[in-house]
Image 1 (tube, rainbow, N blue to C red):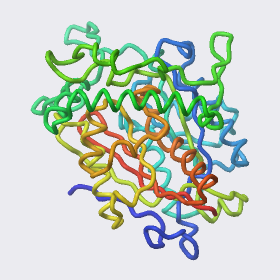
Image 2 (image 1 turned 90 degrees about the vertical axis):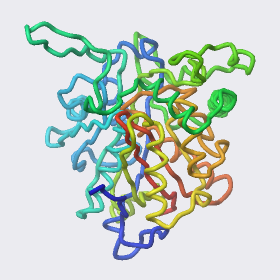
Image 3 (image 1 turned 30 degrees about the vertical axis):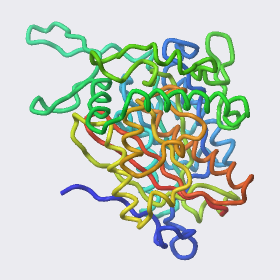
Length: 409
């Protein structure tokens, strides 16, 4: 039996969560991230705990939470060396030894799934408080190998995601499969990717990222901004890139993301506890869902998760105000938004992974961090609350989506 979507809190799907349900209504009360930098670049000397620990420290300061009151640190990680990076980073952040840590792996979805797991634990009751998110240091990821029958090491570049009876394409090939299956043209992919860069450049210049980024010290310098967005990128340059993964294909290096080092995390607690802490606003977590799809078309997974989640909450895609989709490839981003009937121009208002980079296990948590910033900006400039959707497609043929609502508490 396929697991269904969660419906968190005991009020109506679009209610404020007040009343008897406030002790079980999860809410994200703070969200921060590191700079997102190209792998083997500015942050190449920092291992995963080094990327994450400063974010955890800043989250505690921002939220006013006492470190000893944290019930658990739940962190997504995809290609690290194991050893429970969540626990390691919590201790490196100076948290008490009594605070445990849990590391989860759903590949690219790990960061978002860590947040939805924490939300479901809040919904179970008890007014707990969690730090949840994701981290990836692709630059320092360990070399991986299988041991052969004669004891030798057989190194590999990526894990096998499904049994041999299933197709297990590389990510770029899977993006081509989606482009072909759903008729996403090269022109649309290039247009979308170019817009992502321009939006990220504009957002950076406007200072939209400044309050969510925790500066990091790396190689004797302070890194306080993303290094991916390209202000000089133009249509004429985009058109020169050849197919990167399949001869004669439409997916190129220009309309694909690049690997990045990054971390992002949030504070998740109950509405009741948030109010007792004096918190004035946050993202109510209304529900989440994860689905499986054909691994051959793994890039469409986010759309099916979002579709089932929205149906469960009786919400039309047109009612959602803010969309953040992990832009691993323009082809799958467009295909998923088309499936939901959402104009791609409505998604990723400040650019996405095509411009900022894809930090694997961190990327899903970056989506929530971005939604928090966008929702706050919308409220303070337009006086409107926002219904928001975070979506990410996942290697092996999966997708996760989370439905959130910004609210004054």
